[in-house]
Image (cartoon, rainbow, N blue to C red; front, side):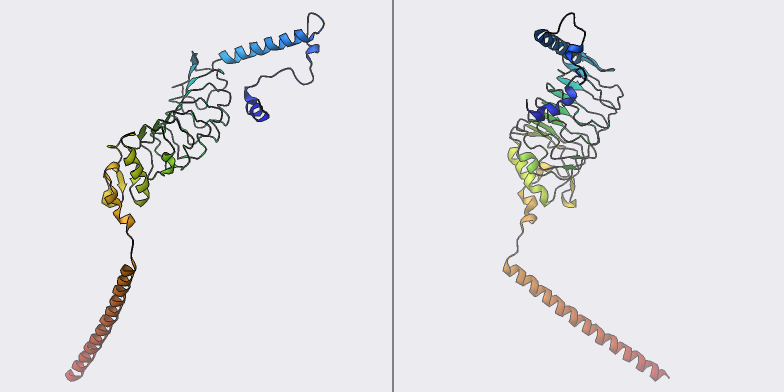
Length: 316
């Protein structure tokens, strides 16, 4: 194991005797012997590993590598989980933050359930060592964006649930980069008005995509994504009935997947030289007409003024 890996696992290590102590200063039944020292070290390490591997946090239940800490009104994540944890449920609590490096020690983790908490963001590199994590549930939280490094190194992810995050406004174009095994992605019922095509086109294994319940603005910028989705609709199950446009006004309420290339025809209008010349000519004519109209109005006003003045003099 290299130096970087050793330093990243510093929180998983146990304390040996202090620097000033030596094993020969510890009580032994007889003279110190290298073989006995080695055996004692191995036994001590084994005992410590056993203790660390079987400990269960308060308010949690642990069985068969499943740690269930759900619905315990926790305000923070529990420390010191069993080292061989495969399934961790922290759902239905009040957790507002996950400390950096929290998952560093739990390399066997396959399932992480954080739904229905108060998370606004996750620390960068949280999943760096969760290389076996396959299922991640972050639904019903307060996430506002999905940054580029959120799922860094979590290449085994198969299912990600980000639904029901009402403040979720932005997904970085590289948010899901490298997740080649991802099959199910749920982005429904958030605050997304736009989603970059780049965020999805690098997911060759995507089978299910949920994007309904978002305030989609179906303008020209959405055309590449919708075209890509239409081409994949046979291979990718989507909640097409729930995905609707909130704008612009001409397509408000229209199902997202009902929009065709004709719907974006105005986005591809290009003007030729003749068009520009015609527009310039029309502008020139309108300008001349405006000047002529103003001139006629001025003459008319002047005549009216003179007629009114002459009438007043005749009356006198």
